[in-house]
Length: 556
Ligand code: FRU
Image (cartoon, rainbow, N blue to C red):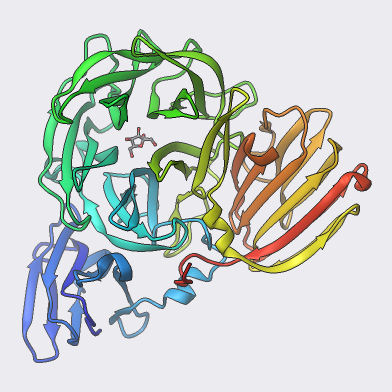
């Protein structure tokens, strides 16, 4: 392979036997070697000459991720992934178009190049780019010791993948049978020309989460490629807090810095509130809020913000199952900021599809934008070679209206709108074979009417959106989530925006009054949109368009 303008080769490798190593041989015959651990995946970085041919020899190792990095323009170009060519065994630049143009992964929802991801972390806008870090296991399609993956975008929709930013602690990696943990979730704020990151470092004896320890750390960056060493800011949880003590989210409110953290107090899910003057020394105040409902181990990935004159807290209900059968829903709380607590006036579900977890928000130019992890709590993932497990919702803009949290896709999503497939009104619509299965549908009703929309069909498996006397809900058939009531908290339906993206359905109701995200693995490669209304004359408009992918570098 040729290094083009890159100066570094990064490889994650584990030795197959004692002495396993990676060798890099340049076209001039020069050889570099690095030994891999037999116990854990070693993250190796080789300095390479630009525009030079190299061969990678990896026979004695298992390699899980390999890419070129370190050019002067990383935020523009991203990394260059290398994949081992079947047959020759040579590492070559991955065929990106082929990789992305596959029914096994989303085309306009962010997902890692491959392997496992969960929560969005460190979302921010910094020196011309949006940044998204995320919980990442580069080594397989399952949760494991956590790294931070990283991506950047100029327009919030087209992303480039950047080098892995953080690795699990060495002590954890060295004892894979005994310990588990890593660089857990956290956030970023931009202050004084620097990005300041807060994150949790987690260590847990395998199989005994009751003895986990979590501490809060800080690091900084001036260019989003190089990061300072991490510094421990909060080593111990406050008295009374459960062993869950993580996921720092920092916000400036009324000129002061606040940090919220996930925990529980007295068996009730709680969001802990800290305060700081200098962003480094933090004082525990009290719980920002405690949820009375039973069965919540902790509020994971809490967020807290001022929005449209109100104060909003959002958190993911760990381990909780609601009366519709939905697992681990996220809830928002809207109210007033009284004596540094949230005096809640109203609350609701963040996403009625329940495949959206650990959302995180940030502000840019007055917009409060959030992204959530498209999770799989019903075990519906289908593992495929080079597949990714986990992806992100579309970036959503948040507002408070009528005591509810409204969210709509950010306007940049419209950049992806492609060829029109249907435009009409007052009739049922039947599009049965949508090539590529990546589309957007917008539907307006003169007034509430019963309907069903078939959004995906793969043999006997189905996903649809129904509105009848039981209300609006996503209905799945022939998959593990069948029977769960994915019900939206709306009284009537006057507008729908539906985003189908191969294995993801994201639905926005009544200009953002509710949002629902649901996975639906569809191996057919073909999409469908079949709308049947009780009173078609009440359909004032339907528009269905294909959606472009986000990886082809289409300029905004
Ligand atoms: C939520 C979560 C966080 C934690 C991270 C670990 O999905 O459990 O609370 O920081 O994932 O990957």
